[in-house]
Amino acid sequence: MNFEHPYLLLMLFLVPALAAAYFYWFARKRKLMERFADARLLPKISTLDARLQHLKALLNVSAAFFIITALARPQFGTKIVEVRQSSSDIVIAVDVSKSMLAEDVKPSRLAKAKELLSALINQLGGNRVGIIAFAGTAFWQCPLTHDLSSAKMFLQIMDANLIPLGGTAIGDAIRLASKGLSKSAPGSKALVLLTDGEDHESAPEDAARQAAREGIKIYTIGFGSAAGEPIPVKDEQGNFSGYKKNKKGEVVMSKMDEVLLSRMASETGGRYFRSAGGAFDLMGLFSEIQGLDKKKSSSSSNRQLEDRYQYFLFFGLLSLAAGAFVPETKREKSVKE
Image (tube, rainbow, N blue to C red):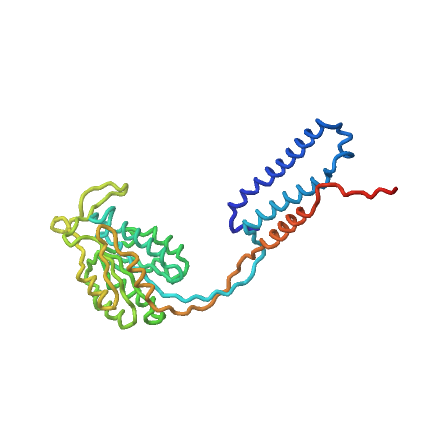
């Protein structure tokens, strides 16, 4: 047996307390009556019937038990429920290149991107969501799914060591997302791109134009600063050991490319969002996604537990009603002259 609101079962502790209260009241009342008459005479001179009183108390205690159990919504047995869903398809591509370790956004660009992505997924219930990770290449971290808890689980294991191939290939991420969305209806699909915008010759604008022709809107979220930030290098224990340098021994400065991110979003009819100080207009992005067309997905059959609280409620009300009609006094006997 399952309970929809199991915490309400704690109220069942009131049932023995109620029974104890009745027991105490009957014992106290009997002691008070014994002050005025012998215990053996009480059944003869009192109009109260102890057995009827006990029956009434038992019915009231039973009513409390059944009604409290009904409030907890007991469920047992199953039924087949057909579920039909209409949704949009959203692919979220996350930049996991080394430049995302820059700390101009605290605690780092990548950590903040994962945090904002988790908050976004929480808002996307009812839609299909897929996750792509990309650096020097791109791959599916989580295929399109309605199971958002699984998507968030894959999100947690993403880090800058996930893809051994260095660099940033934004164009590859867009092309991979477009391929995954090829069977989705135009206007019902979108790509959310979380990156600092640095790209290494992957032709991202060409990929964005092709995505636009396929009816995919791209929403870009930029992390970092235009001034640039050095990329910290840490050892296996996570201790800081310096900053990343190029072949000339110069410290590499990672700059956010807002121009590229704006162009890609504009090319597809999407929108660019800047993550200023690690925050961005989450509800604005969610509103854009909600405005996408909804496609009808195939129906599915799910097993669902049956509510059975009705039986407990019936017996509870029946006990309560029966208790109300049980008299506490003896019936008057007719006396023959």
